[in-house]
Image (cartoon, rainbow, N blue to C red; front, side, top):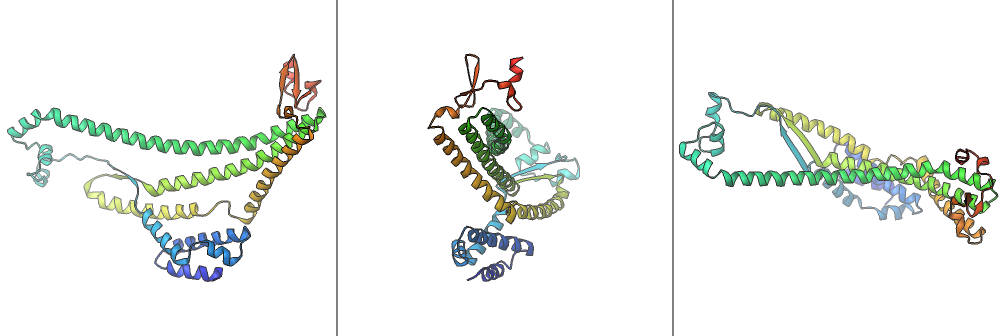
Length: 327
């Protein structure tokens, strides 16, 4: 089976899906096959490494059904739920205690029983409310922690990329003080920081998209105004949610870094990481395995040392911040 046959069979099995959904799902699996071929597999090996068209169709249809059912649903009623006098009273089932309580139709005996048992049912209501509040707080705490983790990945990526100019500047200082192993070491740091920083930023973007997409698929928040408008509001909200969900799922399913140019860029970033580590090891060997080259700066007896070499005139270093301390 070649790629075109795989595409044709999968599209045929997904004929029950909307056209846009079907095209996105087929494109996703074709992208998986292309990625494996880019990694060195033959076309037959790449196709064998992914699910068969039948298995893929089952997974896609199952996922589509699962997306329609939110894991967490918040249903908030907005409006006046009180029961009016007159016609409203006739709609309240007289046999139900809660309905008659709202309509103020309890008998004297029922009022007495309600007051006598109030310590019990009030305690149960308070306990249930406390348990519900604790559960909500725990859910939102876990949700917030997940976003904190995503934010930390973003921070790591930004910090690594931002450290590149500083590493290059310190490498220049190493050349100025004639400490070549020290300069090479920081060239390696710069290459490693840039490559790993870009990969961290890519991972942060993917995490953000995945978590936001999970939130949109599994958390539902609906507002209802009154009983007369419930069905209309819910139907319109469902239609809007389905359209927005389909568009968002399409954007989340597509890898924003899937273009050939960006794929090549991240391969270069991987090479930079490996080259950076290699340069650091070479610098350590050239220094005679002198661990002091890993010391960026050391202050002792009023002198400054970079990589074990004394800096005779720190103020003459390029963009030197040490000149400020000498004034």
